Amino acid sequence: MDIVGILGSARKGGNTEVMLEAALEEARAHGDSTVRIPLRDKKIAPCDGCMGCARTGRCIIHDDMEEVYEAIRKADGIIWATPVYYWSMSGLTKNALDRTFALNFPALQQAGKIGAAIFTAGIRGCVSAAAPFNMYFIYNHMFAAEFAWGYAGEKGAIAKDEFALGMAREMVHQMEALSLANLKYPAEFDMPLHRMVRERHHL
Image (tube, rainbow, N blue to C red; front, top):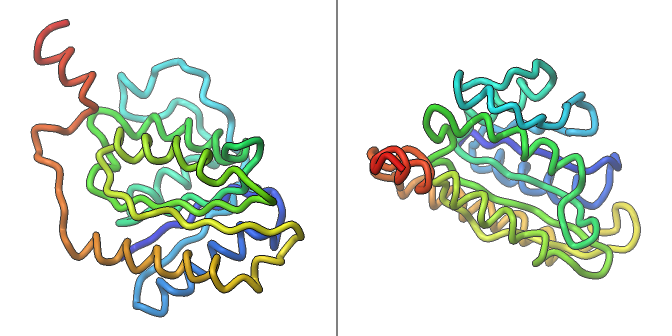
C-alpha cells in the first residue's frame, strides 16, 4: 500500500505524532510506502465556500493544500491523526479536512481508498472526535479501518502506553487487509447519494 499520514497536531513530538509514527513504522515494516504530512508546517487557507471546485474539479486556492491533494490522490490509504480539542478534531485538521471538499468533483476522488484515524486526548473525547470521520469516510465512499486512540496527560507520554501503540499498529493491519480485499464501489455510484438523486431525477 501507499499510505499518507496527515498529522493535525501543532505540537512537535506530541502524543498524536508518536502514535502516527508508530502506525507508519508498522506499515513500512510490512513493505508499505508511507508519506507523513505535518499540517503545522503548511500554510493552508480555510475553504471560502466559493464552489469553484464544483465547476472545475480543482480548488481555486493555491497554497500548501496542493501537496496534500497530490498525496491523497496517490495514496491507497489515508490516516488522519489529530489531538482532541473540546471533543473534536484540532483546528489544523478541520481546516485541511474542509479543503478536501474539492476532491468530490467531478466524481469522488477518494472512493475506494482505505480511511483510518488516530486520536489522542488528555482524559476524554476520542469517541466524539471520531464521529465526523466515520461520516466523512462514508460520504467519500471510502472503506474504513477502526480508529486508534490513546490518552496521555503529558507530551510524549503515550510512547510508554503499549495499548495505544498497539492500537495504531493493529489499525494498519486492518488497512492492509481491507486493501487486499480489493473492495470497490460500483462505478455508477461515483458521487454522493444526494447529488446522484438530484442529477438522475432532475430535482
